[in-house]
Image 1 (spheres, rainbow, N blue to C red):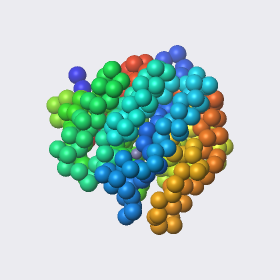
Image 2: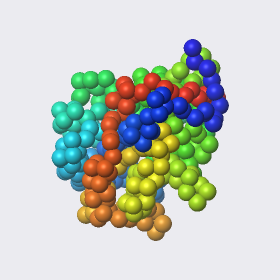
Image 3: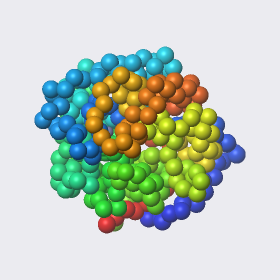
Image 4: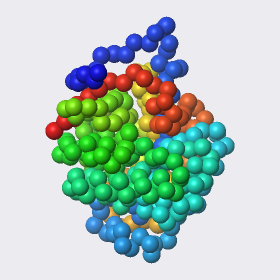
Length: 309
Ligand SMILES: [Zn+2]
């Protein structure tokens, strides 16, 4: 029977003294979207214009698939539904190579700018499309920009109603789009008043200079030097948590077109594109990595947290 508990969760115990750093696998994920899927800037192209823009996601994603294959790593691919509709062969190729297909929604909209119903319809449409293309169940979801917040308390229930079993949208630190600063950091069941809704895998953060910080994806992975990423990842693993790494295909493509945006945003969006592929390869070689699906199948010891409104 599920029992709601509040943070902080008691420390895990490891029977037989198994070291967490050796027993905990980490998770590698790709948000499969194109170079123009940048959120919340005035000149971002709208969905109606996307079909007319030059696409670079196919070549970049195929390059990533080659890196995964060379390093014998299987990953979770959170496909934007729009990308899957335009490039169904990418979904099929990922399935063929043993990767997990999950959903990044259909239209790349911020959760906190949608109603619960709009969000549910977008998430359901994306899941059904991806299941049609891949021929297998799609269980996982990640929102655009990790944009679930304390102001979207309907998020988990709507996602469960759209047929998902797990989510990786909670960002337990301050962030431009969303962020839930006080959220639990470990993977956990999300409960409402009556039942377990789904499993949540928050993006990995660890304390740095007194604040929770992420080092493991997107602009953070591009910005920080590899030695720091490695040190912080080792710390997260030693605490018994998997590191959730996340990347985007455009981040290994220094030549991709730039969108006009304010200087600070330009820096965050395009910093260190030249060195990101090298960091990704080092992560693939150094860490023991798996998909969300396989992590879930091997893990039984989950805490339970209520986010009920
Ligand atoms: Zn995205």
